[in-house]
Length: 422
Image: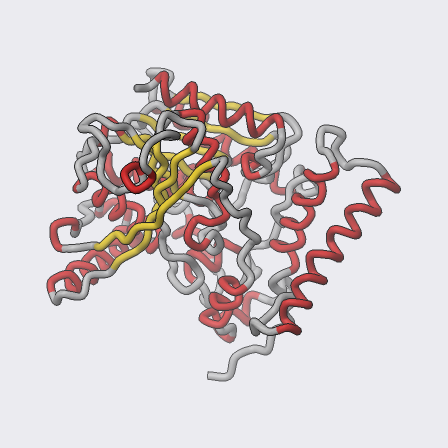
């Protein structure tokens, strides 16, 4: 098949020319930010210069690293295997985790026969079918002696009770005592970026610091190479693996941001419907609960957030890439995207949720979708299990701006919430 030629702004080969291309891509954004900040003043007075620079680099990355002017009809002619390699080659810059903040170790999770699963959730229709196809494939691989695996980060803060412990001990995958509590965190990144959770190491360290718990983060498969529900299945299997190591459901806090927040809700729905014991609590930071992006805030807040407001007809829309890359958008796809495992906001039954903390920024594109989701969860769970915190002037997943006062307040709130639901 002849693929469409694409004009790409970032490197396609890891050579000197490609590196210069990436340096200029970032430098041009920084220079434009400096000019606008000092000539026109801050866009939001609550943001300092550092905040403006990082927000604008993120905006440039998400808006301009892929050609977002292509028509819906071109989708089948795009080589998304190449796009997956391009995204991996140009992943978001990672801040090294300093030993004064935390330390981590990456482990391998093997999906062996004892952890294989059958998703008895036929009411989710096509999503259920896809999940069971993936589960059956994993079962076959395990039975033939070639089990599939993913990696998992284990991280602790040096400012927690583990500070003086042997790193080789506290960074293992097993419980340190029979009743140890942990945070199982699913990172965000539109299901496409965040390879090996490296973009979130400082977030994990802050959460470990304020909760006093170790943070486990499975590195689920990424789109567009692996479409829905690969990510949900990997997270479910990682949860089963953690249980098999000796952790108890009531000692696990599920957490996630953006796409990871949607994965948390999808996990909770599956656990509930399969009559499994739910974790003790859930923390959602800017959860992407509506893959159709239908809320009014997608228009109202596009000047402030770093996420671009793209039409679903764009083949490079994150929804298109994670759900079924290369397929044309259609009314049929729109209906599929309204499955609660894809877009929890469309769930008609959100009962049985554990205590849940939801945090969002006032200025983020997902604001209205998140607000609608929280309203539904509150309606379906009369025990007041949901707490919504809205942070003024903040964009999507503002905890990534961990130097900001709002982010530090959010981390402290997460710590208080987790201790409260011990």
